[in-house]
Length: 200
Image (cartoon, rainbow, N blue to C red; front, side, top):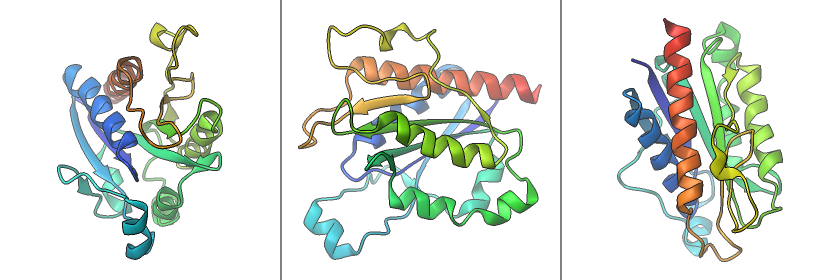
């Protein structure tokens, strides 16, 4: 049985909902999953004025060394100008000790994101996350086309071969669709299954 971490940051809840769906994919495949979020770095008055909210049923990650306990890590961040948010970047900036020890070498990793619009930088944000995971020595799993739900243009939908995605609209009113959530579940399952095979 593989042990998978879903690590995310979410200002308004969209990536948190995707994290839940990814965890469903992991546990539905018979593996263990924990969800953690990274610390808020925005000043409290800014976070309050902007209406940021944190899920009370999820816990903050204790620190970078916690990553060593998992066979796979799935990292999610909303897009900030086509790259990961500063909160997630700040967390990865603390992982130098893990990199020095090669502590994550060979672990399986995947990524996910949320943007306001269809062309809001989903793929560049996914790559900004993947870059960190590659530097850490991780084996990357994408949202392969075995998940056909990302295909077609009949409705607005997330999904890219580089990771699971969703769209929030500019006012945050759009919640992840069932297709977006199915992609997240598929990604969680693929990471868990891959991690289990590599550990065998």
